[in-house]
Amino acid sequence: MTLQVDALVKDYTTRSGLRRTRLRAVDEVSFTLIPGRTLALVGESGSGKSTIAKLLTRLEKPTAGSVTLTDRDGAKVPDRRYRNHVQMVFQDPFASLNPFHTIEHHLARPLRVHRAGGSVAELLEKVNLSPDMAARRPHELSGGQRQRVAIARALAPGASTVIADEPVSMLDVSIRLGVLRLLKKLQEDEELAILYITHDLATARHFSDDIMVLYKGRVVERGPADEVILRPRHPYTRLLAEAAPDPDARGRSMESTARPGEGYDTSYDHYEARWLDRRAG
Image (cartoon, rainbow, N blue to C red; front, top):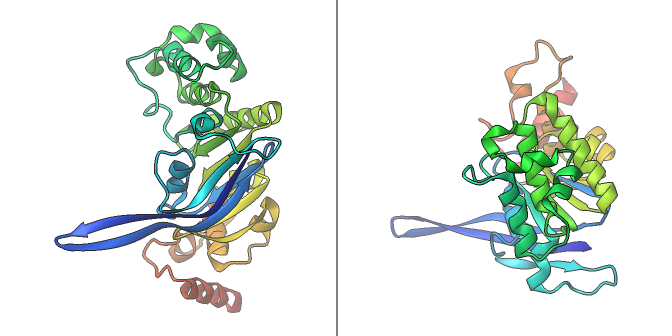
């Protein structure tokens, strides 16, 4: 299955008294999610990453543009089957699971609703969890185990495309790599197309095939992961790379380590000027 996104736009309307203001969260974004490949969507908080995830999973309706899922023969997948194939893994594995229900309930329900094959035990084994965990509730599992359950739930309907919205940011550093390796293995075994949403450039580089950089709802740079991270062309991408923690950098000023958008002018010209100043210095 291939997911094609064309000129996607999402506007929100805010009201202050009698005055209404339009806020464009996503502005003419286009990309393709291909089976067996991972596209990383990178940007600071408020850039529109999670809005794109909600649009692709149909939790929000786009203002303009289209999202089309096609099968191997190029035929459009009917709307009634769209959610069977496009599923989301949320950032917080505890908040995305109902604490009152068992793990078996969380996995059996999508199997039943979507009339999918397989069993709860098979799903648990697929994400390297013991089948006896089906009787437990979310609070009895670790953060990493809960996120594995969330991944299993996304696969239950027979998903071919997974939207992973910051899937490891709420987990301990020691278990993040295990979850990312699991996603990579599942991608290879199931021929999944993955949209990996993150602000972590290090994991974006090593986990994804391609990277797309988002700034104020618009794509400002895209390309192969190594090329975007090691040879960024847009000044915003350069500053995102500089804002990443660097254990070898000591005595660096607060300005050079501050995140883009925090206390600074966020215009393109400002980013270009700061970059040129550093090169000159």
